[in-house]
Image (cartoon, rainbow, N blue to C red; front, side, top):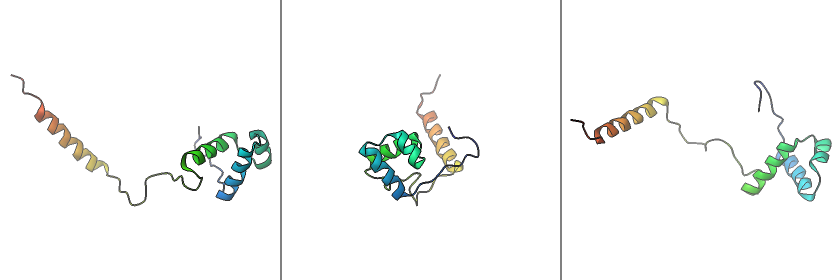
Length: 94
């Protein structure tokens, strides 16, 4: 788990592909760690991303550009309307 203020090392795409190619060729994680300094967890996540998406450059994180998040006031109004709808659907007690 990340600690407050922790920074993460970034790797360029060519480096990732080179290291992943060696990993797939049978080089052990320990040797890769000693040679390139890439942690085992990072290496396994790269392998799973490549397997899932077909390449490391395909996987993008976050919401697609151009999508607008509804602010809390809009969500609150939608929730109020839904609650009113549910209140009107319940049979009245006598």
